[in-house]
Each structure stands twice: as structure tokens, then as C-alpha cells.
Length: 346
View 1 (spheres, rainbow, N blue to C red):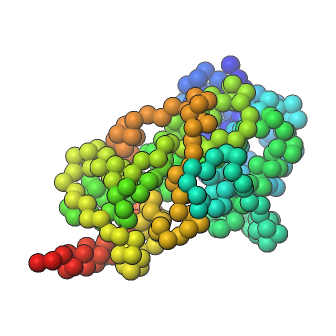
View 2 (cartoon, rainbow, N blue to C red):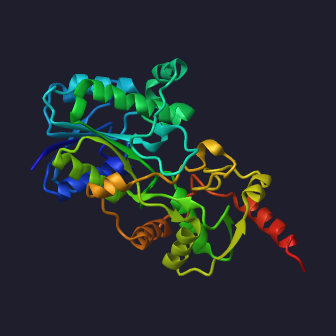
View 3 (spheres, rainbow, N blue to C red):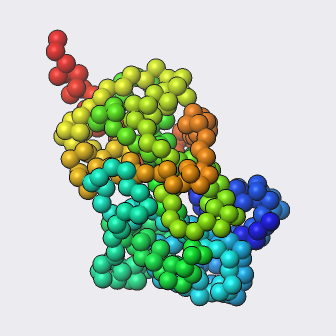
């Protein structure tokens, strides 16, 4: 049994990591600001309250076998955390991001691909953010990926081979605060003609947050260092949407719209059309086609997609009054569908 600290243990990923560690029989402590509600196994965890950007006294000198850091967005956040903890911690698992690669103009990026560095301006942005904004990934904008790389380097400089880096891809599941996959399930559940983006065979890539969390704990137990691309194997957009239709038992009819159609409709890639980026964007052309064979070779297991989709659908059907943070505005989708219909030869 390990003594595990989860920094950010009530968030989407952090909560899943806590659950995975408890399920594996480990002793778990979470460090949290106490601002995010998430169900935790009762009586199974210790809670330390604090803000990594305002004060880490609750962690001062503490020793843990495994520290899982789910919410470091700038190198100063890593260094201050490690300053507070005892230097005798066993392993530090940093949740980084596949965005650290920066350039996705070639498919199948593996863990040994080149990574960028943050510019002086990006580092200054991180240092100048108000304290209350430093715990939100959205606050860092385009600096997010480069700063994640700086987090990795900061950890490695301090702890060397005691660091495990998880470059997470698109994490999905119930209570996902981004609503990206949730949008597609909700839209398909509503049925009828449904805009489907780009090419049916365009690849997408995602992983159930519970599978990612289990892998983070298992690599910690095994003492595996180095970096891992942490996401699932790619699948086609048509396969994903058909799986959504099957999970919802929906009569949705997919109307495939080209990249040009979608851009002409003034739909924003990724936010208004989740999981889609235009093929013409060379820098991000293969963003969802990472090489994940290293993680699978070291024990990553993923559940069937239908299981993940069914769980999200059950959760989302209970909150249909909640507006989603991502997805096509209905009026824009209706306009695009109307334009496509008008162009069908009569």
C-alpha cells in the first residue's frame, strides 16, 4: 500500500485519480482549495485545504510515496509545491498535456518527438496572472502547451528519474466540465438531421478519465519514469458518431459537411464544433492522432467506448436544463443544414 497525495483531488481528473487510488487499496490525501464539489469515497481519504498559489503550509515537510499533480500550469507552481514537500517523496507524477508538443503537422507523434519551450513573454504571462486565475487552464491561452513543457522540465530538474510525465489527451466522462464529447451525445440524442463535421474518416482520439486515472496510479506503483502519451487509440469521426447514436438509440441522421462548409458558416473550430479542426490548419492537422503504443505496452487498458458513452448519457440526461460550454449554436446548425439542403440537386 502506498501513501498517495493528489493535488487537485476534487477536480474532474483529480477526483478520478483519488477514486482509482482508493480502489487499489492505497492511503490517500488530497490537497484542495475546497472550491470544487466532487463525490469521494466516504471515510477513505484525508483532506488538506490550501491554495498552491497562496500558501502551501499544510504540505510543509510531508512525505508521500506518490504525489500526483493534476493542476500545475506553470513551472513556478511545480517548484513551489516541491519546495513545500519533503525532498524524500518517492515519485512525482505530473499531469502534463499533449499540447506540449506544439506542432502536429505529422501523424503519430511519440514521446520522443521534439517539444517547444515557453517564450520569455509566455513565462511573464504566467507570473503576472492574478492569483485567482492561476488555477484555470483557460487563463494561459496559447501559452498553455509551452508552459506545460516548462512544468515538466522544472520537475525533472528537481527529481530526475523520480518523475513520471503523463501527456494527457482529451479526457472524457461524466461530469466533464468541457462538455466537448457531451455535446455530441446530447445533440445525437435529440435526433433528426445533425451536422457531422469534415470527413467521416477523419481521426479523433480520447480516453475515459477513469482509465487515465488508473494508469497514473499503476505507473506510480510500478515506479515507471519517463513520459507517456495518455489517451486512447484513434478512431474515425464516423465511428464515434455512430457509437453515440447507438448509445442514445437515436434516429439522428448525419449530414456530413466539409471543412469549407463549416468555416463558411462561421462556426468556431473546437469550441462550437468539438473534436474538429480544419485540415487546412497544418500545425494542428494531426492533433488527435498521437502514438500511444508506449502507454499500452506498459499496461494502459481502456474500457469499451460504448460503456463510456452510456455513462455520460445517463449523467447528461439528468441535467438537460444546463447549457453546455461547447457545441454548435442551434441557429448556426440550422442555417448550415438549410444551406446543404438547398445545394442538393432536385
